[in-house]
Length: 208
Length: 208
Length: 208
Image 1 (cartoon, each protein chain N blue to C red):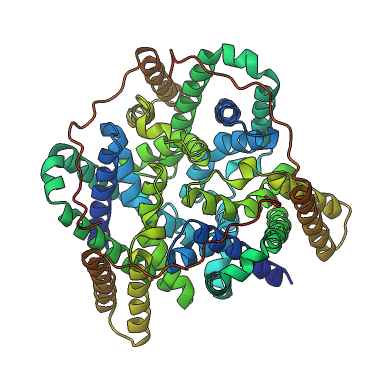
Image 2 (cartoon, helix red, strand yellow):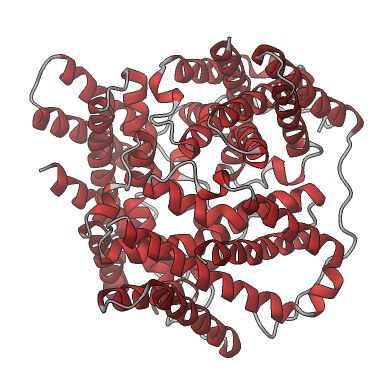
């Protein structure tokens, strides 16, 4: 089941990477590269940080196959997908939830403490998107999009609490994914975001 | 022989990094930093992903020495090199071929499957250039330059096929490097690139 | 003692990340994310490259706690800190010195050669800042700020020399940190930088 969820998350993130490539007018292979790095990026970061190498995406061929399938779907069906853009955003929220839950669970299984587990969940969830946005020169979603990292952290926290309560792992994962995806989905609908600090300092230029 | 090829690839990528630094008007040390990260970047990514740490560049001093030599050559001989820019592009194509072949071979030796081996070859070949371009704020060559990743993937595929046919490793490496470098070289001359998807969607802004 | 120095360096880098987030008008969580990645980034790179995984920041909760504290301080006290911007720059110089010394010492303890040890020190020192600057779309400080990498390399070299002379580790670390922080501090005051190469080539566009 873990594996199936991981593949689903990989696929929806690959879709989001492929769309970003389309927006930046990349050619077909550029789209495939961006879809692949977006799809497997979060898992690569998670596995490298946990010392579980080669990462899962390199040990099981289906990860890359699923990324290429995502790129292919976007290349041949872009106009139809664009009309249903809302569904792409929902898919992205679903991927965020799955990856946060899986990342936090793997971190906890490696014996990380609570903050380390939260970070593992959040980095897994946002890693692919950060790679995607940095490569095309955009500010990463995690830094400015509403409730993006917040949702991933909240889901990871739910997994921690349910784990401490002794609930079965499938329940932990499902609840964590639902909380993350749900929060992100609500943020999308209401265009919510956290407050900003009010003061924007102009540092003196004497010391550069 | 593997080691000599790796050093040659490192040197030519260091040259390309140093040139990019010159273009962005970095000072001498900025050029040396960019040359070094470009030269060893692909190998660092490869070794970290395969769990072969510390990476080769940290175990053998000659990698960094070669990068610094590349930066030095560019700093003292920039005008003469700029006049022979075509040769720099050829050197970059040679580096791409060498790194694709070596990365794919190392991935295969670590027991990766076909897609994993292709990815190992491609990431090793393009990794240094991605780091270089991201650091100076340019769109990475791999996403939009003609036949860049395509060539690396094709060379890695050649290595896979020749390996499956049981040919000796030097033959595999040489053929893979020649195919990658050759394809990239042809793309340079003909200014070739893959087709783009024709439709550029404007996603509705209701859901951001 | 190593641990305390590492936490201090993490805290001051978290401050610098939080300030950068404020400058780019991120919301509170964006600031916390940027502060965290800046604070622990150099150590993550160091530990992943040395194969010491999960990295220290994932094994000891205090690293992330210190990063969040840094973000919190900046969010609630931004105007007052901005008035004392010089002190932030001094803190950044202190962090640079601590991380260069600790990174070089850890590299030497892992059996790296001289150049590898210098690189380990420099990457640890500048890694967090590179992540910070790339995420917000700025040219990384290490490529263009006066004496940034130079100072980290000089401190790492001091550690190497004192180690070869057989001095005790605390002495090595203190001297290395002081040299790096001191050089960076002098560069700040005098606005020093290394010379640039005079010639900026315009490569012919025939081969792109």
